[in-house]
Each structure stands twice: as structure tokens, then as C-alpha cells.
Length: 446
Image 1 (cartoon, rainbow, N blue to C red):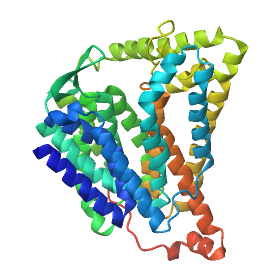
Image 2 (cartoon, rainbow, N blue to C red):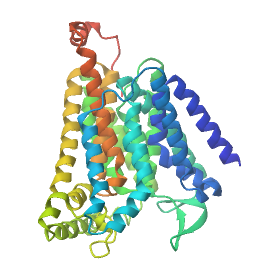
Image 3 (cartoon, one colour):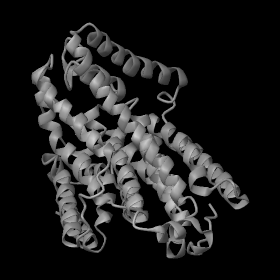
Image 4 (tube, one colour):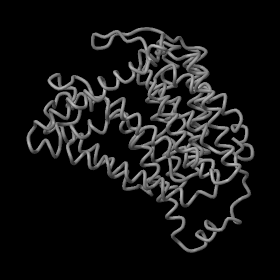
């Protein structure tokens, strides 16, 4: 009962904070799987009711969106092309039941996935209207993530890379006793990205120094639970720290260099303390990727190419990979899964979503580069999107990589918000283009 009481108190606190700032619920959404696995490791109630945390997150999300409606903030406004294309892609996946080569598999997977699609793809982006919402959500994720990472590392029982549940259960003739390590590693990645790339001023400078403790925890969990997330974190950090810190200035260059050094030192510590030497062997990693990703994707594409001309355009059907005659499971490579299961039409939609998100990053950077707070927020969101793109090349299915599409939609909503703010007249444009009119904000030290 203690864990249930803590969980209820936490959800009530988030509901109260959502009245003040609805976007704080984004932190709950990004840390959802961490909350879920910690509660499952502590109390059998959360194991016997596996979806309890998801329902709680969904309730908070709906409540926060209603608050935005009541305040007249119009959460349905500024819905971007990337959002409509994402909805079209998933509508195509659902409609593919009618031509799927494995319709029972398509129906079964969608029956399990529709709730998470509704929560993470449809509702979550509605929390975000502009930079302020995103920054609130990321700081919320940083705070909640710091707590959850600490609890997972100190109070949960680990067995290798798995967080063990408090009890084991049987489902579909399988014994289940642990959570998904990839989900935990991804949550740690979100927390690390937010901690590294956000910039802080004023009272927020507390996080400028405390974030390194959180980053250590996040890297430890990431290295312990999954290899891919650790490599992806390094890649997006190198790619987006120049956006956050502005390398053109001497202070920005020094801050970036120091941050890179500290991150590498933290990563080395995490590997030494928690890395499994066998899993991190170079040849094993290459073999696992070739056999578990490239080979499976090529088998799916081979079946797609040998199908009918109609299959070339609309694919073999969503989740056709689960057909025992093909793979019996998804191929762990989302882009090629989309090509094989949703054909050229679905693949075109997928590429357009990636293109529009990338274009939003470029356009937003042109508008916010003078403001360290907005620049850091953009760097964090862009890095999270890039992180999910990299993850989609090594894990999960399209229906399981919903954050990729959610982040793309958030980028588009922020871009449309900036465009509409500047549309009424030249006043905002003048303020936006005059360096002396920006609030006096010091660049972050590191």
C-alpha cells in the first residue's frame, strides 16, 4: 500500500501542477516507462495491473489538455503538416488490415497498440504550443527523471540489464518477471539530453550544476540497460551541443569543450561501473546488428518485392512481419518496416515527416539563435527527435516508436506558433531581429 500511496500522491501533485502549467505533464509522459517499471519492481499490484501507470498518465494528459481548453489556449490550433502526415500514415497502417497478408496479426497488434497510439501520438503533442511549454515539459522530465533514476538504481533489483518485477506472472504461456530494458534506457536518454542541452539562467542555475549528477545516473542506467541508446546519446550530443552553446563565441566554445569532456568522463565511468564486457564487444555488436536488424529487414523487403503490384504501393499490411511465413516478429528497423508493410505510399509519408521535422529545426534555429533559453530548448527537442530516428534503426516497430512522430509534431507546432506570433505586424519582427531588445541573459558556463 505504501507504493500505491506514493504513486497516488505523485499523480495528485502532477494534477495540481498541471493547473498551473499544463505542460508539466510532458515530464510524466517522457518518464512514463520509468515510473511504470519502478512501481512494478516494488508492488505486485502494478504487476497484476500492467496498464495501471499508462491509464494514470492518460488521465493526467487529458486533464492537462482540458485545462488548456478552459484557459482558452486552443490546444488544437497550430497543428502542423507533420501531424497530419503522421495521422495519415497511421490511418494507412490501420486500413491495411483489408489487404494485409496477415490480417489476424494486423488486428491483434492494433488491438494492443491503439491506446498508446492515442496517448503518445495524438494527445501528447497537444500539450505543446510554444517554447515555454516545451521548456516547462523538459524541466519537468529532468526533475521526475532524476527521482526515478535514483529510485531505480537504489531500490529496484536488477538482473543483468533487466529491472526485476516484485512478482512473476504468466501471460500467453510465458513467464514474465522483468521490464523492458530498452524503454528504461530511452527514458534515461531523454533525461540526459534535457540535462545536457537545456540552458539555465536565474533560479534555474540550480540545474546548471546539479544536472551532472542526473547525467551520471542517466548514463549509468543507459549503459547498463542498452548499448544503442548510449551510442545515440553520444551522437546527438556532438551534433546538437553547438546549437545549444553557440561555438562562434569564445565562451560558447569553452563551454562546449568542457561539456564534451565531462560527458566523455561520465560515459567512461558508467561503462567501467556498469558495462557488460561481453555485450560491448565490437564484433558481437556488429554481428547482433547485422543478424537482428539488417537481415530481418531484408527478409521483409524480399517478401514485399515478390508480392503483387498493389503490394508495392501499399505494402504487405501493418505488422505483416509477424506472419510466421515472413519473420514471426517485427524487423527492428522502422524505415524498412514501413517500406515493406506500407509500401511506397507509406514510405513516402514517413520520409516527408522526417523532412518536415528537419526543416522546422532549421527554420526555428534562424529565429531563436540569439536567445540562450530558446536555443537550448530547440537543441534539446531536435536532439530528442534525432535520438528517436537513430533508435528506430535498431529497435521497435512503427507502432512502438511513437515518440519519433510526437517530437516531429512538436517541432511543427512550435514553428507555426513562431510564425503566427510574427505575422500581425513588424513589431515582433523588429524585437526579434534587434540584439539589444533581448533580455539580458548570460551564456551558460557549461
